[in-house]
Image (cartoon, rainbow, N blue to C red; front, side):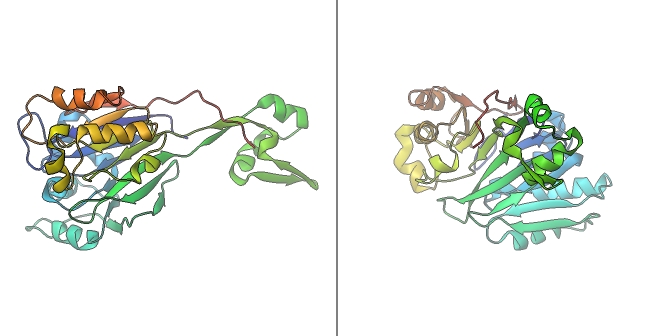
Length: 310
């Protein structure tokens, strides 16, 4: 289980930027692992303004290949090379990812000085990053698109009084936690024998662009944070859905049904100068709705909840 998880909104607009509202990009730091969800034009500049170092970037997750979600990649890749990066970078995206990323790498005369690993994030895949998983879900958009769920691994909390009472050697606790059971001198010890309970990991869901999905409440079930496409308000639903997006009211309904803890509105149409209309729309359904805004940082706190281990 990680010590710290911080979300930084680098850009929250959709389709085209406007002053104070850059294109989609969300950084999620899990201890020393920096992840980026989407990479709209100008993302490297937003990193610089945020104080989050893009040199520590490990993984980029692209929801789909509409321009506003990935055109920041060429500049970011070349800046990393210019600054002397040597560490591998992983990029994930839906169908077509290898071709789109290869084209981005080959723009102009710049030379990439480090290895880039590109993976196709097909729907319903799970990627293991040690302290957390990334899971994927197919969106309902106008082009191939996926949502991502970053799920911190659960932690079994050890009860030292139980450890002492059964005489289990403390130095083998991590082995027991990892394997679930350990045999010592023909006696088998199980993790549940020393467990106080399971501390559930934190969960962050990022949708990218999508119409309302029947599968989304389950995909986002009990998420600490849901960052959902909320391109327009409910009065515009026929239009916003036709173009492959979700209204703020519809996203709030998904958050409510999925029992998420907090909904961040995201991917605002440039037609809105005042976002309170979207916020009021969402809060009428789901009170724990909040506006994301450029350079907002949010720490996802650990829960004190303990689930009994069966």
